[in-house]
Length: 83
Length: 83
Image 1 (cartoon, each protein chain N blue to C red):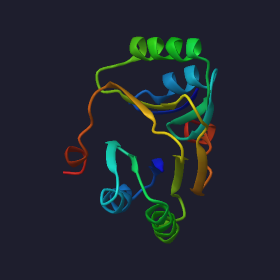
Image 2 (image 1 turned 30 degrees about the vertical axis):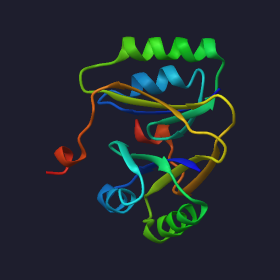
Image 3 (image 1 turned 180 degrees about the horizontal axis):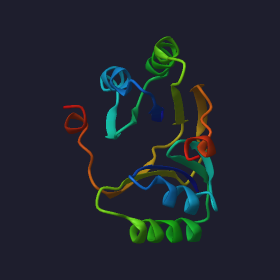
Image 4 (image 1 turned 45 degrees about the horizontal axis):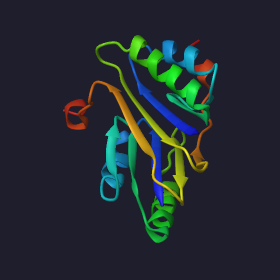
């Protein structure tokens, strides 16, 4: 399955560190990629564990076909943001 | 077609104001919804026009089937953020 995960958190680093193991980083708080059902469930459970009071996460997924991705503007560099 | 639009901008309000005409707001900088091809092209053109130097926009789209949406944590309130 194909997933897009967007998070809004005061501690973005915890989500970034975890999600980069499975998915591609696309923008400050956006990860994207293909996952097995098992990996997807694992990630969902872990997100529930990691969730702090003010965090907000949305997962968009699709079982049948991949997303088309269009980018506009600046290519953001995660490492640059957290130096 | 089904689209997810994620933006990262110093002036989020300009994107929010424009995109809310066509799509549903899902989180601080995330819009989601179904669009005709024509509306999608119109939005892509407008995004190109609105783009400032440091803006970064990603559009995930799918022609064939809708996304499944899972939300975790706090439901963010856009108006609350910009008071």
